Amino acid sequence: MKYLFVFFFFPSILFAQIKVQYQVFYTENMATEGIKIKVNYQQKKATDSTYFHFSNQVWGQDSLLNCFKTLANENQKYAFKLIPDSNRIVVYHPTSKEIGFYYRIKQDYVGEPLEKINRPRIRPDHFHILGESMFTVPEEVFNSKVENHELGVTIDWIDFPEKYVIHNTFDSQKKHQNLPKIKLWGELYHSVFVGGDYRIHQFNCENKPVYFAIRGNWFVDYQDKKLLDALEKTIQSQRTFWNDNSANYFTVIMTPTISTADSSFSGQSTTGSGVWNAFDILSTNNPFNNWNVINYIFNHELMHSWIGGKIGMKHEELNYWFSEGFTDYYTYKNRLRSKDLDFKTWLEDFNVEVLQAHWKNPERNKANFIIKDDFWKSRDVEKIPYRRGAIFAFWLDNQILIKSNYTKSLDDLMKELLQICENEHKKFNDELFLDLVQKYLQKDISYFFQKHILDGQDILFEKSDLIEGFTFDIEKNLPKLNANKNVEKRYLSIY
Image (tube, rainbow, N blue to C red; front, side, top):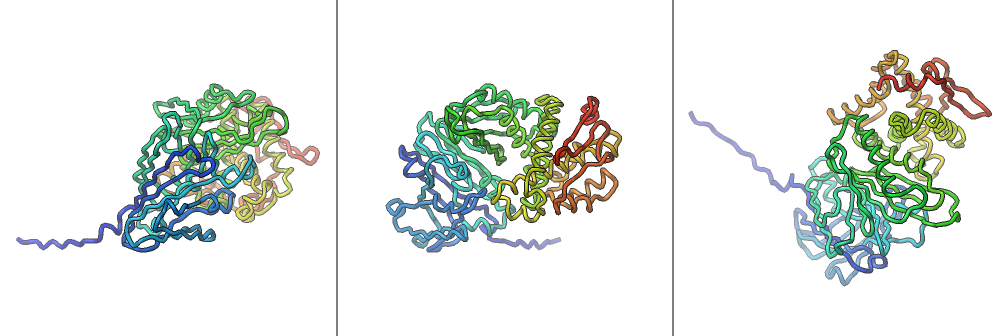
């Protein structure tokens, strides 16, 4: 018997992964001349011009193409046109498949303005740059058949002195980095790169390495050892809660912004950002340094490894009530659970920092769709989803405890949500969440959700909303949660 085999050949290049090589060069004048980078890329066919992407807006910062510079003497036979509205760089070059050009990333501001901390920071002794503001990529990556805009990236750090630290959210102290399969938006463009006089500390969590990168001389209680101990406790407690120690690499990066030894800066301004494999902290450094603030940041930003990280958001700002609000709620709850806070302090913090802070916010009743549009425009609007979501999470936690007669809590729902998102490759959205809530409460809360989360009306707790031992009052036009001495055991009873 004879068989006829028919083979279909498709051009392999159609499905080939896009690969980009970067070389980052050290010069003594980086602070004034910018960080020099060369990008090499081979496209599918020979052309005389190529589009590259560079994000002109990142995390509330605009006009970031001001930080992108090219020099004619470094790019002979090349010309460039920047189109900020399209996040595009048009590269004109001799007809070829091979493209290679140099560019510089420069700091475009002077001094220490807090509103510019997410822009490239390049100083004589260190640099701090978001991946999205450091690396330009060929626009062809957006047309790729490869899912999730994946690409292959290599980064070589050239001529950096031996003692010059190179550290980022992919690796530590590696002069050659090979990232063979990396998502553009969730990984390369959700990363942080630092270098210079950072101090690198390491510990292991169940045989998985965790790095802490810090620079500067800090005031009050912010000694390296104390910070490292607090970080280790936080990571261990949260990985235990989620039963997840799968991260093969993790780092925390902590950088001072304004430093002053006196009280001329009358307070502390600290920003934490969850990124790929890491979280990044930028903080003022002065005698007002507050240990509770930095411990809160550790707990909040680490929680984003799961809420907003592995439980990915389908609609970003529209889902901030969950990704930020539930993260904030579990920041407080896990600090209580790990004994970082005693119950009295937890109750006081939840009253002052969540309930009352929300009531004092003149924008608190804004609808959810307005938050999406105005999140980066107003500090008051930015804080709405944190507190609105945390209050909703507390209501839901109490409801599940009551319904299950203290055999289940919101913890169970969150862990099941994590499994669904990971095992079924789903992203969080309102419908997925409400279906899961209905499973735990055996009732549809869509009307409650529409009224309080989407429309923004205040949640006023009735007696039936809370487990035995909690009461809710309005005192001097501000809400206050009260608790008796037995409620802590009920609140944490099933963990």
